[in-house]
Image 1: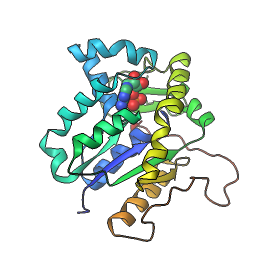
Image 2: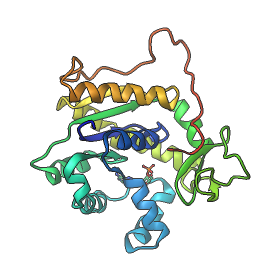
Image 3: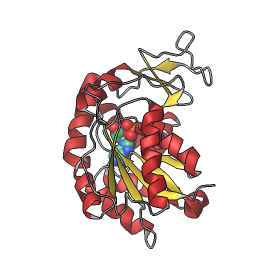
Length: 251
Ligand code: AMP
């Protein structure tokens, strides 16, 4: 079994973070911690946190830092994150969250921050066509729908458009990414933790790129210490090409 790891995956919404984090969580046998999934679950079960969070999610706004940090702190208190680590999806999203998280984690530290780079035009296309299973969260798109009547191939749940995948909320989330989340790239690069990975291609191609970086890190390979180079299309690939997510992939 490969050693565990404490990983953060950054990237715009629609960059494929969810799918890739789920795959990394299986491969490195660490929990996948998605703050978006936790918040959606809270909204669905109408907990006090969910009632508070709903309007932020619907508008594509960020939940206040202290609320998200408290939620992540409670999750990190569970034993499964202590033994082998975790892969964080959608967190941190602001410099204040990253600073708070560093404090929470002490004396441990993050191993690697992987920034999944996907051009904005492509991310927009993916978000507008994204459809999700209401029950298990499996991801589809209008170009790769479930096999039967918008019923999830995995669990049979109803496959719908996410309530925050409206054009207005998507635009708001992308603007917030630029103003609040993009500075984290510089922050983690300065700490020598950041590696940028080109996120366009089939899910398998992107997973291979990510695991190559992580495996090299774990084995003290030549990638390290990481250099914060700008991810770009592989040589010889002239145009941005994307294969649809496979049926039942997580976002
Ligand atoms: P996601 O599933 O990561 O796309 O997140 C969905 C929504 O949950 C976001 O648009 C925010 O409203 C909220 N959210 C998720 N993670 C965070 C976070 N780390 N900080 C603030 N808001 C968050």
